[in-house]
Image (tube, rainbow, N blue to C red; front, side, top):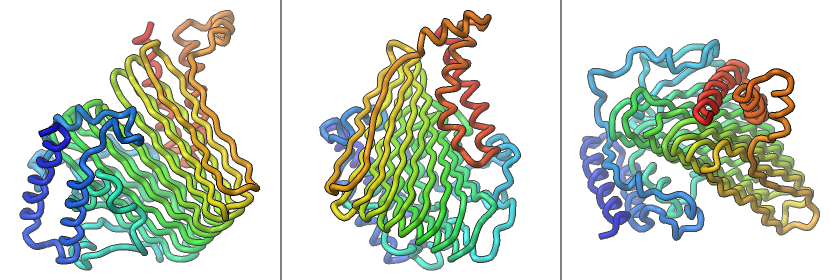
Length: 440
């Protein structure tokens, strides 16, 4: 039996235990969906290097781990999460520990009428089904999506009614606490026609234990809807993190999404935005800062289906020590998507001769009246710039830190939520300072 097949069998056993632990609380319809998802997972198996989408990301270390599902939180459950909150951020927050909702730690700023925010488990137990339209994530295509569907226990449901403007950020904080735990959170977000909202999605670790986060998010934006989305992954260096985000954007909607990867031993971020209506404005920003032996893999697909849409994608990476990275960004322009304006850039800074990045920007265009461009750069700090700063009395390490922070700042400064931007500026600055000090 291969390692991949053996791990597949392991998860089948865990699934049987998981279903028994539900004690009939899952509706018949949802239970059928879970079993169908597990069958699809078995059929797919875990991806390997033979899969083009995973060519540069090995799951060998993940497959050696015996991850289990946390059925009940231990007595050491956290009672104070202030250490993981964003300072000075006034938000309506939902806190999850090992994937389980913590109402006593949640709350905060009140939300206006027409906004429904809740944890999924309460709705699933009551209705057995919570969906704003059809699922956006394709079925039978991705093993980790199917695992999420099979092991879905809790997550977040956000519904903003037509024309409602939510001035208070909705913050979701996922804290991993238990060793060898696998958590499969789900986010279902619907922003109706003309509505506006801000969503902050954050992942942290309360210990140095190995754990797996396998998240699936589905965002649906109605006509003229606006969504600002921030995703920050800052888990420990032993963590495995797999994230899938699927977005559907209707006519004249606006999406601004920023993904920051700072933690994790192995991280895979997949984003697929479908510009379904005319006049859509879609922006994807990304920053990844890795060191040691961390590995980060960013895959994006921006799909232009209708005319007069614009998309902007700007990802920057800083890699130190023996870290490795992957960026594969695809822009797909269908024949009907005339007058498309699409821009994509991936820029990478290597702080070590041992760091490695594989980048592959792609354009696939079937329309003839478009303006599309893409590009990728890989390099090290400019020695002339370092010399210039040193000639003005700045030390070598300080000069490198100034230039590196400026490189990262091009993404961080695009964060419109000031408290989050300030926190990330501080966090990124400290990490860069340490990375450069280790290099000296």
